[in-house]
Each structure stands twice: as structure tokens, then as C-alpha cells.
Image 1 (cartoon, rainbow, N blue to C red):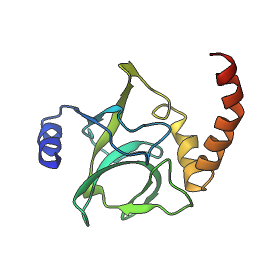
Image 2 (tube, rainbow, N blue to C red; image 1 turned 180 degrees about the vertical axis):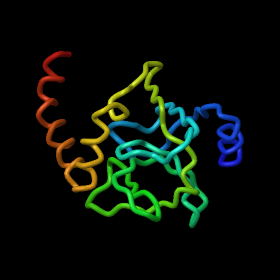
Image 3 (cartoon, helix red, strand yellow; image 1 turned 30 degrees about the vertical axis):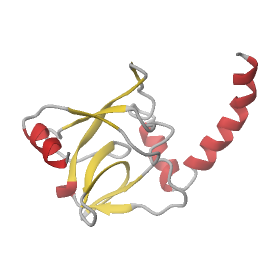
Image 4 (spheres, rainbow, N blue to C red; image 1 turned 180 degrees about the horizontal axis):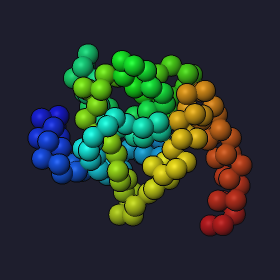
Length: 146
């Protein structure tokens, strides 16, 4: 799939595929269809969700930019515990996620201006605890509305 993704992006066309795994939950869920678009100049901004090659295992990963360094971007999954982030070289970043589809509908939460707050909370190790706390608060209302 990496070769196909690279070929499509090099032509300036977005690449769509089904996400696998839970590292980006709740904003990107297992089975969501995501579109990765090529960068048109510059490098990814804080909070952007990017697709990159993890060279040690030659695997495509989709995670959020939570910081910047001279040598690359600090990247981590939204569903990661703790505060550790991976430093990824710009040459390994293939494109940015520009669309998420779930059940045939577009999901924009996590890709808009709120991405900056999500990146800050993720880097501080607070995103996962906040999401878990919010889901516990909302759960009683979901059950009563069915």
C-alpha cells in the first residue's frame, strides 16, 4: 500500500483508505475511511493529522503533530497514554489527513481549529483522561435517549 499511496500523492491526488487500529480514537476510529492529501509546500502545522512512514518497521502510520523541532515533527496518536511522542523526519511524512468518513458521513471533529487544543492536550498527556471523563458524563444521557 505504501507504494500505491506514494504514487497517488506524487500526482497531487488524495488517497483514500480504510483506517485500521485505535491509536487515533475517538477522532479517527477503526474502519473509518480517511483521505490523505499531498502537502503543497511547507510542512505540517501543529495539530494536523498526518500519514507517515515509520522506517524501522516500514509501516504507514496516521498520527497528530503535537510539536515541532528543527529536525522534524513530534507526532503521537490521540489515544496514546503518557506524554511520549515520536520525532519524525520531514522526509518520512507523506501527506495530511483532509477528510474522515464514518458510516458514509463526513466527520470533521479533530481536523478543524480545535486540532490545536487537541494537540496541546495530547502532548500534555491530558487528552485521553479528558475523553474518558467526558464519555462517562455523557453515557447516562445516551442510554436514556434510546
